[in-house]
Image 1 (cartoon, rainbow, N blue to C red):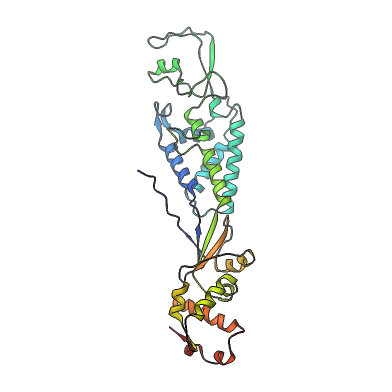
Image 2: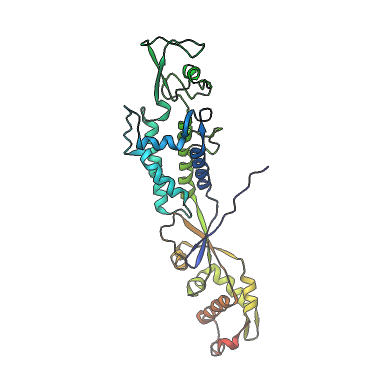
Amino acid sequence: MPKKVKKVVGVPVGDAVLVPLKPFTFIEAFKEWDAVCAESSGIETIGMKSGSLMDYFRSHVTKPRLGSANKGSTGFYKQLAPFRRRMNKMGLPQDSELKLLENMLASLEKLEKDKSLNPRNTMFSRPKTFSREGKGKYEKGGTKTPIYGHYLDSFFAIQHGTTNREGDKWVTTSRNTATPPAWQALFGKITDLFPMGGLKSIVELGIEEIKKQSYHLKINTTKPARYLVDIDSFRKVLARAISTSRDGDTVSVSKVNAKLQNKKYDAPEDKKPALARYANLKNVAGDFTSFEIVLTPARTKQLITYYMQSNMSVKTRTLTKSWQEVLVI
């Protein structure tokens, strides 16, 4: 079945609605990633007898491994809990949330470069020689060899009666080559366990989507009317609608209203501050590039009234009449 495309939903901002021109896919991708980390468990799935990958990440803050360079007080592992809370509640991305993503990316990049803390370099040791039969007997006090990423190599698989994960590259004998589940969760691209990609890929996607996002502004008021009527593109459309909806000295508000429905306009850079008066855009990450006015007969009448009053070409005799006489709904 084709993948469902999520509908882009606008967010109320003051007397307007801000509609992203493209969906923010990174938010859903993160929620899927978070669910996999929280729910994945089992020795065959993630190589852990108990707990989930999220428990594993959490333990790096509360109970770092003995002798580990990670003290649990700084960096990615410390940031993860507050990061998850913000991401799972995120609506319209704010400037502060863009900064949150940038800080997380910096921590992930630092962790990825760290030869000790990167999960693919977590070191275990096994006997250099052991029996391939039974429970893998080996000589006590014999020579040990280091393995990286995970412990489920041929020796530990025999010891625990589980699958040897060397073929999956969970375990390797050299640094910077293993791809255990914890590494997949943070730095992998698309894997069976993480079809949405690792956290670093999702964070990079989020930064890109926020920085490249543009919005459409749906304005739900015409008070004051002057900021709208002073925009050339809208003023021309309004003037044409009025001139083609006249009957002598009267203007049909209903006809003008019908002609202005569902029209979109580019937002000129020099008029954006005026348009922003209709919306509470403080701290929103991104900018709007177009707008429309959600009109009712009453709002249309306000626009006509202001246009007629401000249009110097309107004859004085027309302006002397009351607007109740001139405007016909």
